Length: 101
Image 1 (cartoon, rainbow, N blue to C red):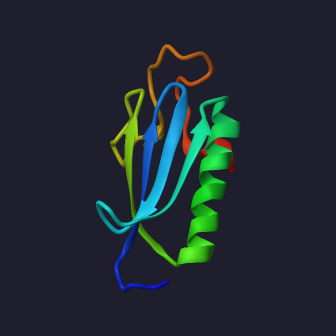
Image 2: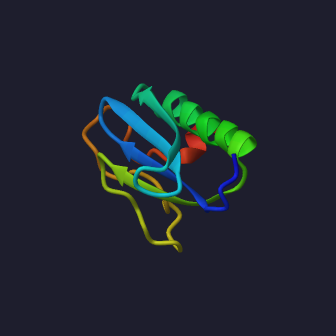
């Protein structure tokens, strides 16, 4: 169902789960998933699969918002851009979405 509104992705990345949503605004959620936080590769792989499936079913996604359990490198010129940086959770220091590819 295309209501003409732009769709956005959202991730709340927590130490025990990643909550993923696709929607056009508050009260307009089109898809959601709860993904257990395992290893970076497994977790990001499932997150990327969810958003790819959403794109295939719902159409193009216009943007992404992320809340993370660890600090993110937000400097676009940094080699670690988009990665979770220092973090006490084993295996997650310097983790990035590239782990799911």
